[in-house]
Image 1 (spheres, rainbow over the protein chains, first blue to last red):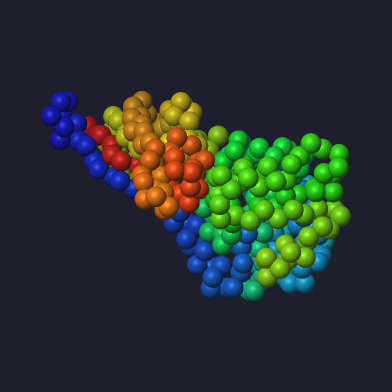
Image 2 (image 1 turned 30 degrees about the vertical axis):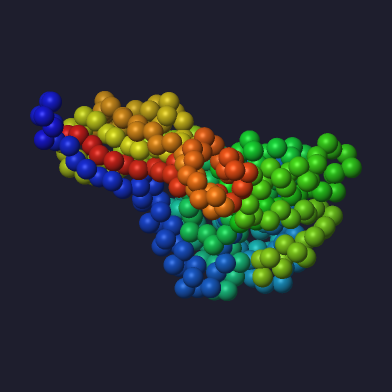
Length: 215
Length: 109
């Protein structure tokens, strides 16, 4: 009891995101047990996540399943479904990120095959998704050359947790003011561990390196 | 607005432990490197506890500054942001605090 007002102080000392993290651990165990490699794909809206997935599904030569996170509409899931890949769409409504419980619910519907590669396309947002562990093995952040080389400094949290950063739309480099070396320096300032791989999901530049990384 | 998800999580844990008793105050610890905006957290907490035993409870936010440890020179130094650079010039830096998001305690009648 506190001496000032007589109220009872209850010590808690647990992580605010304890429930999310416990659910993420359950997801992770499920992935390990079933040999499913899960990638949490994060970026700002319009960086080319879905285009990259459409091409990856066609070319990687192993089973792929996809969970699509968007605030509204099933449009991205329909694009993925047209490739013949199993997909579940999560619409977060007012939510700006996916949480481990949402992914657990999607897995019940999706039932990815053992041995498959599971892409979780997070809501297009460079801030909120970085706080929420989903149980993934790797976090991949996509940055496109139309967005500006200083993005890693402006949104350091998501770049700080990335295992790999894909620099997409390099086919547009002749038309935009973007210095890949400057971008690489900025990324190293917040995350010295993450590689920066320049790609073009439409033209195909360096996608073989992306597939090698996944395999 | 990830603060709404955090506030909902806090409200859930607090109400479960309160077991029906009115909650007067909740204390959380938030590291400076977590991308959490205290004003937004407070606003969302007010919404998250509406209609629960914690409605009207105060939210105390203990701020924890960011600190880094340099693996090159061995120095510990303040880290105001996620630019991992030691004053000695090395970028081989480990974040030692500032990423905490902890529910510390609560006060009930």
